[in-house]
Each structure stands twice: as C-alpha cells, then as structure tokens.
Length: 162
Image (cartoon, rainbow, N blue to C red; front, top):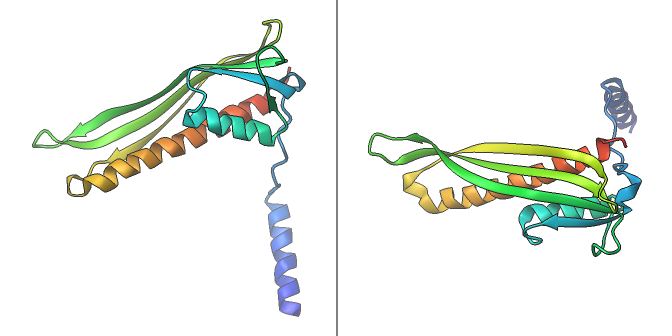
C-alpha cells in the first residue's frame, strides 16, 4: 500500500513538473453560439466531424435565418496522387491529401475569421499481393485525415481572438 502511494505521488509530481495539463474545452467566439455551416456536402466526413466537435464545445447548429455566425467551407478536397512507380509500370506509393479552406462571418457578413487553409497528407505503400488490404488502408487514411483536419479547424476557431 505504501509503495502504491509513493508511486502515485511520484507520477503526479512528474506530470506536474513536465508541464502536463489536461486540455480544457475550447473557448469559441461568442458569435458562434448559433452557427450555420455552409458546405457542399453536409454529410461528408469532415462536415460530420466538425459539427460533432463544435457541438461538444457548446455550438448549436441552426438554420441560416437564426444563425449568429456562418462557418463557410467552400473547399473540402481529398486527392490521391501517385508518388512512385515500379519497374513494371505499377504504382508503388500513393499520397492521400485533404485540403480545407474556411472562414467565419457574422450574420451581417462581417468577417470574424479570415480565410484559412488546412492541408494534411499521408503516404501509403501499395502492395500488389494484398490489394483488398491496401484499398481498405486508403479508406482508413481518408477517415484519419478528416479527423485530423476537423480537429485542426476547430482548434483554430477556438484559438482565434476577435
């Protein structure tokens, strides 16, 4: 029992000494309390992830008539590009990239957060012997990129001071 108490105390002191802190909820701009998201595909991975993250931080999504802010996302592109080609003209590596451009305006059209672009990319090796696993890995990468970009977008919204 004493060893356990000493270990827990040491762990607590170690975490405090390195500067570790739990992340608080984001403080989003107050204008974003009632937001309308303007995006081509409301059901895309990115739109669903951003909506979920913002709702966790107190934002309510409403129709455009009731909105105090508009989150505009005109660019939400996932691109798969060939990186290397083997001897027999078969693809060896791909790059999957996700690019998002966004801004926030208030109900009067005043820009609260200027246009910003987020881009994330991951590389993927193609295994001709295991085609099904490679295509599934590509889908997982796309989901992972959507998650990463959504978290970055929401973090930027929370770190912007008006």
